[in-house]
Length: 134
Image 1 (cartoon, one colour):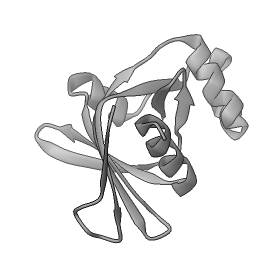
Image 2 (image 1 turned 90 degrees about the horizontal axis):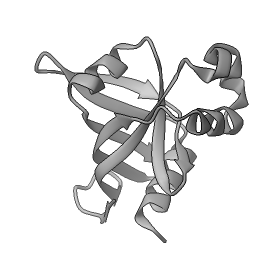
Image 3 (image 1 turned 90 degrees about the vertical axis):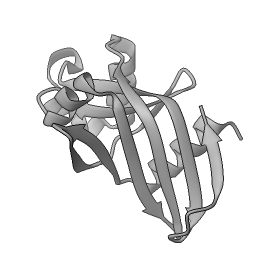
C-alpha cells in the first residue's frame, strides 16, 4: 500500500486527531477531524478565520497525532494551503455536514496539503513502528 494511502486511511478511520503548530515559540494543539485524499495527496481542512491557519502561514511545520484500535499515528509534516476550488469541492462532497458553515463556493475551507511528511504508526504507546514518508 502506498504511504500516503496508509496514512490517510489511518486518519480517516480514527475520525479525530490532534494538530500541533507553533506560535511565538509555544506549541499550540487543537482537535481536528477532517482529512481528504485528492489527486494522490493528503489534505486536512481548517476554517479560514482560525489561529491555526495564521500559525501555519508563519511556520508551515506541524505535527499530527491520533490513536485508533490500539495503534498510534505520529505525523511530522509541513502544511501548505492549496487554494484550488476543486480541492474544496472534494472536501464538501466527502463531508456534506460541513456545507452549511462552508460559505459560498466553500470559501471558509482552507485546504492544507501535507508535504515533507514522515509518519510512524506503532502499537500502543511504543516509539517504534512502521515508518512512511511522502
